[in-house]
Length: 204
Image (tube, rainbow, N blue to C red; front, side, top):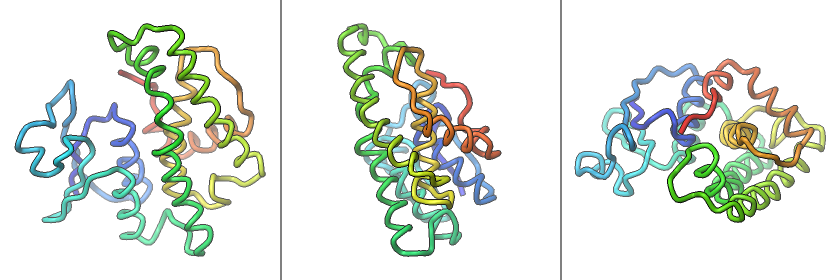
């Protein structure tokens, strides 16, 4: 298998973490700005959105990081619960990470981690952190139930996605709410070999 994408992308790291958890060999090729423009015809032929990552396995090409996570889990029969309800819950939280947890952080991450020019409005930074914190409070409520991972006691692809988002929250150099259950969860994720590898310090 080959993964196209830069390791500074949280979505690329999702896929790399899953591959490492599953013990699957792979090659990685740098794509994505500022390293290599994915808007060129060669890359757009693989992913017309011009986004990373892309997974290539023989003649099979797959994009969208969560679709790749599901494919790898199904392919190997691991990282998703076998029991239907728990499996559905894991997929629920996987989707929630992309649609609810991630969007609010955009302005704050660009301003405080990536140092992107133009992201210098203090009120917008504060609003971004507040909205992001509201979503983190939802995660806190789920984890405070006492289960080990987000969809129960079994580690799943949902935890790969959410732990990387938690890592971004923990890495944000700003005053923000503290969540005890989330902090404990983060330690459990970091204790995994692949978790420690792919939750390295945030870089632009």
